[in-house]
Image 1 (cartoon, helix red, strand yellow):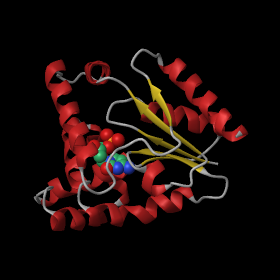
Image 2: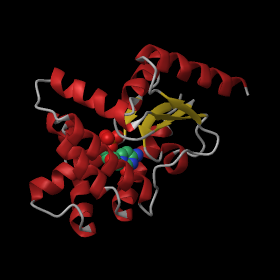
Image 3: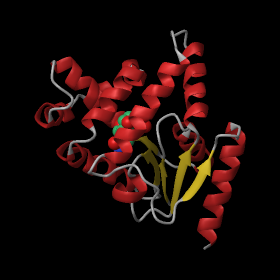
Length: 207
Ligand code: DC
C-alpha cells in the first residue's frame, strides 16, 4: 500500500505520517528533507537558491546531510522552498522518491506533490492542513520547547510566504490531489488527526 500525505508547512503532516508509518508498519520518507538538504548545500556552497544552476548543483548533497540537525531550522525551510521552484531540481529528486514509493509492500511519503506527481497511483491520498494561525502557534511552541527564540507574528508571516511560494510555483504546485481526503487539523489534537487519517485510509481500502 502506498500512502501519500501532502500539505502546507507546519500542518502536522510529518508527525501524522510518522505515526501512520508505525501503525501500518510501512517505511516512511519525509521528502521535504531532500529539498531542505539541497537548500542547505546551496548555502554551504555560497550559491544562490534562486539560481536554477546553483540549486541543481546542490542536489548532489552527501547522504550524511539528511541527518544534519540544521535541516530542521526555519532558515533551511525557507531555502528549501526557494530551491524547490526549479524544475531541474524537482526532476533530480524524482527518481529517489519514486523508488522509495515502489518498495515491495509499499511506503508512506509526505511532501507537497506526492499525490499529484510522485505517486499519483497511491492507494490513499491525504491532504493535511490547518489555519495559518494554528500552524504558526504550533511552530512557535515547538521552537520554544527546543529553547529557540521565536516571534509568533514573524512565524505567521514566514508561513504565509511559504504557502504562497509552494502553491503558486509553475512546477508541481501544492494542491489537493484528485481523490484526496482533506484533514483540517485546526481544531484537532494529534490523536484526533491520527484517528481521522486511519478512518480515511480504512474507507479507501474498502472502496
Ligand atoms: O515539508 P517541509 O517544510 O520540510 O518542506 C520544505 C520545502 O520543500 C517546502 O516549502 C517546499 C519543498 N518541498 C517540495 O517542493 N516538495 C516536496 N515534496 C516536499 C517539500
